[in-house]
Length: 198
Image: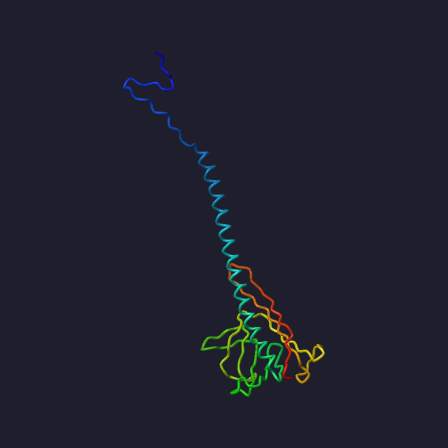
C-alpha cells in the first residue's frame, strides 16, 4: 500500500497540521495605507454630502420666505391707493380698509428691527404705519444683504416722483452662510406690481 504524501499520517494516527502563514510587515503596511485611503475618501464624501445638504436646506428656506414675502407685498401694493418712497430700502403704502388704526398705512423696509425683545439685523420686514411708526413689526426675510424698491409710471418708465408712481418692483439679495460653508445666495426680483387703486 502506497501512502499519499499529501495525506501522510504521523505515528499517532493524526493528520499533520498545515503550516500556518502570517503577514509580512510590508503587507501590513500596504493594507494599512489602502485602508487609510479608503477611509479618507469615505470621510470626504460624507463631508461633501453634509455640506450640500446644508446648502440645499438654506436654499429651500430662502425660497419659502421669498415666496411668502412677495405674496404679502404684492397683495398690499395691488390694493394701495398711494405710495411714499422713504428710501431705496423703504416704502410706505396707503391700503384702504387695511391697517385702520394706522391711517391705512403700512411700511415695508430693510433694516435692523427689534421684535419681542429680539433684535434682527439685515432683515426685510413689514410694520403698520408710516416710516416713523413704532408699531410691532412682522419679520419677513432674514440675512438680507441688499434691498431696492424701483418705481415706474403709468407708461412703465422709471420715476422719482411719488405722485407719478403707478408700479413698484422689489429686489432683494439674501445670503445664508456658516463658518464651514460657502454662502448660499439668492437674488429675488418681483414683478412690477400695479397700484390698481391709484
